[in-house]
Image (cartoon, rainbow, N blue to C red; front, side):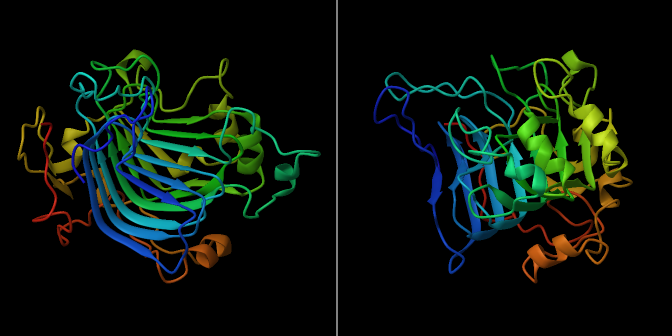
Length: 316
């Protein structure tokens, strides 16, 4: 899908792919979005699973989920080197683009459930997002090109749960990960939100390599991750994104080639969650669809280049 998103109304750009309450009878495979004006992939509820999803140069978020989405996805690539400039009358790109934007529910007034805070008791039902993403590679613009807001690798908010493991997030304009509110932290504290065996590198220079959003304006998840002993499960590094992969062009042009395989001696070639047996909840949710891997990121060391010969890079 190339150059999607023409605005039907003011500030109403369209996604490249929108999946609304799509069920588990469908599987999404080998889909690419290139230079769309809004989200590349967005899920509103549903249970559809996916593999081999690629997003190059998004106008807003690369992967956006909300409304209780509960599907499973593995092997995803998101790459951002610039912010798109739409032609006159086509619409406008977002001021707060993210790699992942994950909402437990949708809308600014939904940060807590009605009545008692059921999430603090580990609520796990279809009303709240509980998706699974494994083996993702998300590359941002770096701090030299920073949007007015956003530029975070993964934003988790509004009471979302979910599973995020064996991923790589690098060269983000701002922090690599942001857990936005205490409602989401409740999910995190009661084992409804898992962030495991991920590698974060080259977080925005303006934040001196800070991986987590600081305490203050947003919830202080540095402390939350430490309390849950998940700091050691999230490897933070100041190495460059380019050094992690076999081929990552500095300034790609139309038709550019990427090789997302780990470079020789790359730290992402190891460190993955290679077995699910230690965590029965991941085992149950992953089923046979999600495969454990010893590596992190979307590509296996020396393995098949599954994105080759069908994806394309283009800005115009």
